[in-house]
Length: 635
Ligand code: ADP
Ligand code: MG
Image 1 (cartoon, protein in one colour):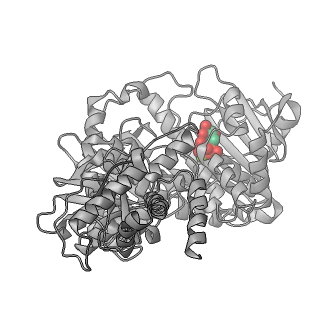
Image 2: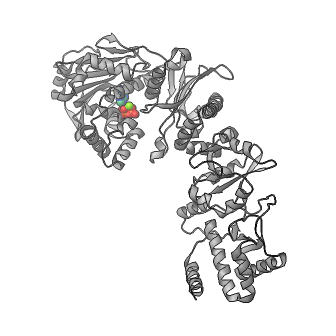
Image 3: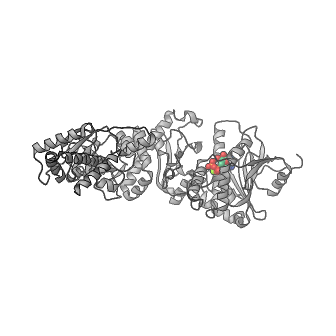
């Protein structure tokens, strides 16, 4: 081992001596996992913009590693090289064409080098790849949404070396090297202190990153308030701040945004922010943000929680289970509570009464924040809601403690709103008619279909507002919400909705003939209907099919069918006829003069009602019958 210069354990880069080491030590060769190769290919060949974010990624990794270390120290595990300063050191070398990022964090063992830098474990990186595939391999702009972590180093470097020594007592002193093409090598590198030192051998056209002023500029833009001191060529260049512990008045919008992006590993602007402290029932300093983009909307499945838990500035857990209700997983930021024991483990977290208390206080504050923001700027909230509504709905179904508060955040179009505009349940209630005990809703695929639905006629005629449920989950949400401010949520497709009498226009069939027609129809339709009656529901349509209160909506049926091909659900409907409609009057006459034709028409009218109700399963008979009817109509 004497051939190696006895290098100081210092953090400054010494690329020449590292090269010497590289050539003399036996190295294990590895190939990258296929996904990493794809990713690198994109990173190296297709990403021309935003290259500079690599530095933020590497600094964020250094910071993460030291957060972990600090936690290990606090929980009194024996760590290698205790007492090393938790600092990030950046070193530029214009002549050597390198930039070095070094930390004294947890470091990596041999296995960890392979697992962390050779395979994709990181969901953001997977999401990036997926989106890149879907965008047809042109990921420009995507990096602005995802970031690609460590691999972004290859945007600016033709070769990357990672020197490391793990915190574990039995760790080795190692170096990982790659040119970002097919694979990487892992070899021994004696002389490492605990932590990681990343040496970037810059590409010829990226030499700006070996210049001190340029690197300083980047740190100021992206990483200024990282929770550890950052040194550039030996000089301290950042202020360490736990922003969440500072006074609101002393924080600028830019600082908030930078904090959001750093702490949340985000690239968008925050849409909303909540910064508060409380002493009772538990000490809390929280700074949390709602993002402006919803990654789950792009089909990547559930995101991980983004609110980290600290105790007096020491990170306890970056994604603590139970800190927030599951539906709030889109929020990002930090919750710090001085009351927590540092050694609370991931496993016991969810059972901790303290964590439950935090959960209750914070989730209520967040909901109140949304409520206030939506009142202050409804337009902005509408835009936000359109992207994040599924989270709120999930909350109504799953978060019982917050259900009623959350229901106030739900927004819908309705028969009284302009297309595209949204109203809340509270708006609905404030507009409800005197004595109206129910909140009416109707489900359907889109506004056009709902606007022209026969179910709406009676409600429109009486000036009653009907909420439009156009999201497949709305009905499910209404089922679990049941009521709002004492008013039951009721589907207007259902039978048994009570309604005030309404002065209708036009002459109606008399009672005796109406009754005879109802009997004729019931006779003809048999088991398919429970009853046939004349009703109050219709203004312009001849008949309507009302479904039992416990029947599924067409949307729900479709979902069930999609999940189970054998799904069968026989719905018997109530048929309501409109005794003022010309077709109904003519049908009454025909039932006496030409019963055969009347039977054909009866069946057809019934099928039409089923179509409107979204209940017609098989249209073959309908079409045959329609053809017969047309033949007769044409003589
Ligand atoms: P992420 O940071 O989101 O997990 P990265 O691609 O940036 O994804 O990093 C991958 C993994 O490599 C990290 O999760 C970590 O385990 C390891 N790693 C990267 N940089 C360091 C470092 N400076 N110290 C210790 N481990 C690191
Ligand atoms: Mg990272």
